[in-house]
Figure 1 (cartoon, rainbow, N blue to C red):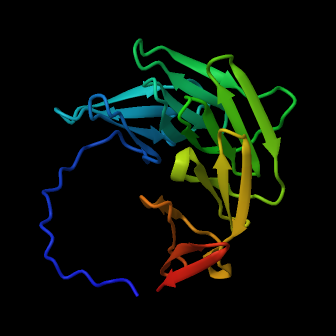
Figure 2: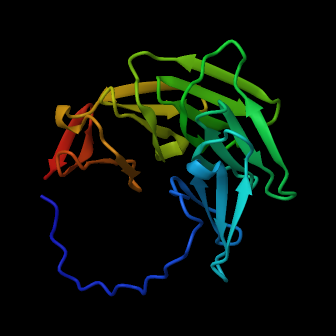
Length: 231
């Protein structure tokens, strides 16, 4: 059993920051260089930036029909965003601020791009909700994509032990552990009651935590496909 926590926690003051109407902020990404917070505003087709010092909000519009969803910074300071409508990755250069688009292979359908994360070499791994998994290598501009019909709902992700990346295929009720060095992944089933899991986090020893609002519970991976459920 997990120990109970009785220590009183002092809550910090909450600062409310006014956004443009209908921003409906989705993903968040912290720029470690200056402490600013970036967010996706899908209805506006834009990304927003909150200045860490002044709390001033500025918007970067991504173009007509753009619908940004997931956000991630790469080691070189560039910010990447998936786009559900345009079927591209947006990239904002960390030094110049230049905005570019990385297109998906032309022979593929719209992938419903969702989550993404950078590995230690700066390659961007991204998921499509319809069971797509892809990689963009900024060194050579190559985009590689594979389809997995049994991994519907991929998107939610978290860093894992040893540089690995976890993705949740919430519709399929499975977790995927990606090894970026080998370019391979292994999947494991979530508890049946955790289909539709929405929260994902990893611990310092590689432990995996998954939350489910539907079942009002949190599950911790116990290894080898076993789960410990905290209800």
